[in-house]
Length: 107
Image 1 (cartoon, rainbow, N blue to C red):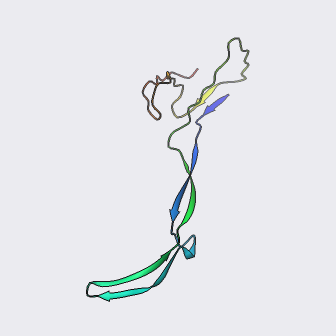
Image 2 (image 1 turned 45 degrees about the vertical axis):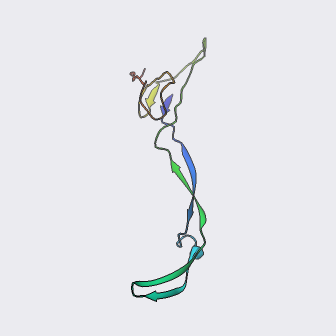
């Protein structure tokens, strides 16, 4: 039995005018006028939604609970390969904090 970190992912939408993805997202219309300090120009802008999937910077809290009177057979070994092996807490800690965690040596 091997316990490993559980990653989580989230999808986000962002407005974009990136012309390498969608060439007509921004087009030059023309120069509007000039004066001593410079010139003004006009662009047509057509924003679009761009999806992205990112990975969470923390791990999902998980637990394995054996029910009372459960009969369990494990061949070989139990390995804890999580980032913070064998931790427990009372459930009162805020997300992404170590408050209330007490490391223990893996069994």
